[in-house]
Image (cartoon, rainbow, N blue to C red; front, side, top):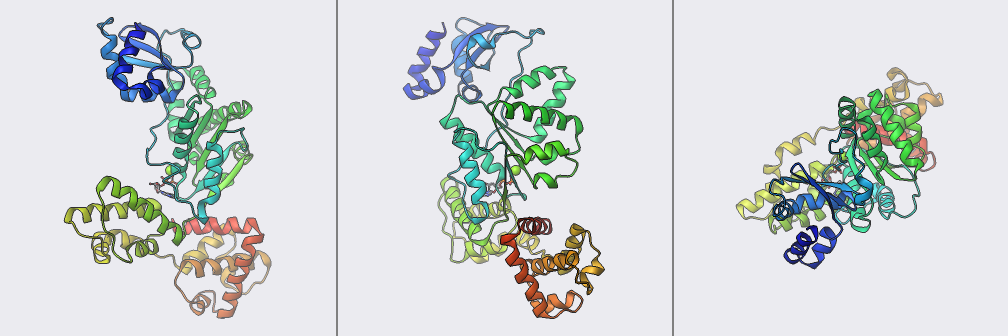
Amino acid sequence: QWSKVSKELRQELGESSYKSWIEPLELVGVENGIARLSAPSRFVGDWVKRNYHDKIVARLRADHADLAQLEFSVGRATTVSTPSPTAEAPAVLESAPLEGRYTFDNFVVGKPNELAHAAAKRVAEAGPVTFNPLFLYGGVGLGKTHLMHAIAHELHQSRPDLQVLYLSAEQFMYRFVQALRDRQIMDFKNLFRSVDVLMVDDVQFIAGKDSTQEEFFHTFNALVDQNKQIIISADRAPGEIKDLEARITSRMQSGLVVDLHPTDYELRLGILHRKAAIFAETLGPVNVGDGVFEFLAHRITTNVRVLEGALQRLFAFSNLIGQEITLDMVQDCLSDILRSSERRVTVEEIQRKVSEHFNIRLSDMLGPKRARNIARPRQIAMYLAKELTSRSLPEIGRRFGGRDHTTILYGVRKVEEMRSSDSQLAEDVDLLRRLLQS
Ligand code: ADP
Ligand code: MG
């Protein structure tokens, strides 16, 4: 009877859809208004459910009048049908929804993200596991989620047989708590241990949540032991996540840790062009006046999401009034965004944050001491002041206890020079920059 249904679907859907989605399914059984089908992967099951649920139900009703819904399990029918003692439907591991636009094709690569992109690409090739876990970190809106979804999309395409599970750390915790509550912790464990690729987004969320961390740690270890790929993202480096257990931190550091740096002007410009092409596809073509992209790339610097939102608003507006996007329109339409991105970091803030970070007194930072443990942070603060504010060297000098502009210049140069040779220093500088800009 399934063969009859599948034959009908073959005619209706055409050969290629049939081959991808219907042919691999098997009907395991029908019971209490639910038809159970087995699919070769979670992805196929999800897809069929989303796209063909009603069609399949309608056809199966010919024989089962009370049929209301389909349920999918993964694997061959014979291996899934071990019924759980409670006789309830086994919980299924649904991936969190993936954003269709977050593909590798739509990801613009520049200096600040090239390593992260390359590492994500490598993992998506699903060859032998080369680094495990892959740990991606970076500030808000720099593309972590985009890259993870891109990996999932790519794997779904090239390896539909793999079970790829993407979810946020928050969802991980939610499911864990739910499993505890429903006394299904064994199911939870088994399900998580059966995936081929596990991606957990924004893992900093589980810091301080002890039992969730514990469970995460075990899941993590079990998967790594089976040589299954794990991909994790966070808003900062593993060692900088407070209240994360040391053993978890060290496991996270045992694979490849890559960092999405804050965007630079060129990357922002590239992203604007790419997003404009994407918006044009959905919202219709729009003319963009001279200097508009350059202005936006120059002014909206911290978060790609904000940049994208600004562009989208301009597209919608331009479409509405049927005129090209001009710099005047930008000023009118985006006054709120432009105003809030005006908030510039001050030299004083930089000094405060840097002193805190290196655990020295603000008075020492501004004072005359020359000991290395004071002088180095001072130079870093000088460097950041030059980078992040529009103050001139003499102005910065005045704010550092009346130092000469040549002293500031020396400090700035020194840090620039050391950034390439001293990775600890480079990391400190990046972290501070990120803190100051968020
Ligand atoms: P995060 O998870 O790091 O906070 P997201 O991945 O959600 O950031 O990215 C925020 C938005 O910016 C998304 O719409 C994403 O498509 C876009 N974005 C970020 N970086 C890039 C990039 N390099 N190329 C294209 N789009 C990007
Ligand atoms: Mg994200």
